[in-house]
Length: 134
Ligand SMILES: [Zn+2]
Ligand SMILES: [Zn+2]
Image (tube, rainbow, N blue to C red; front, side, top):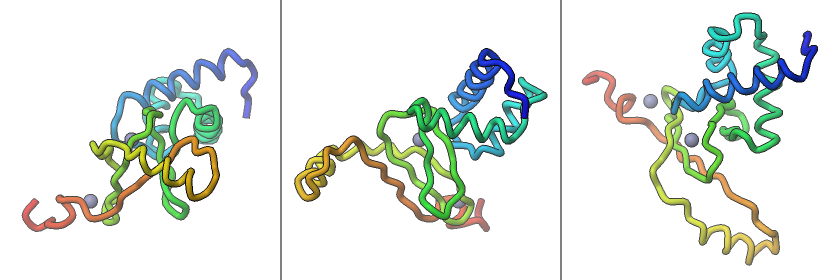
């Protein structure tokens, strides 16, 4: 796994971030790898994975998905809610205003200094509810 120079690493991350920011589909690492590979043909899936983890840790991107579900990534790091279809697996942004009052209440109950919260709704999307008529 040659990651020889820091410069190359920086360039890889920039391309990954650009590709992630270009879509609203909350792609998986594999999906992102497919689009990144078009610009950086020599990049490996492992490198994409590793960079995504590092970028998520640094708060440059958001990692979404509950335990047991496939991890997806989001270039939008501001608090926003997601909705996942349990049939086709797609994840969309939900234009619902984040409920900041929840953080207040959570802080009151727990004594924690709350730094954020994460909500994902799940259900069956309109297309999957009625595939016969699609
Ligand atoms: Zn669906
Ligand atoms: Zn999102």
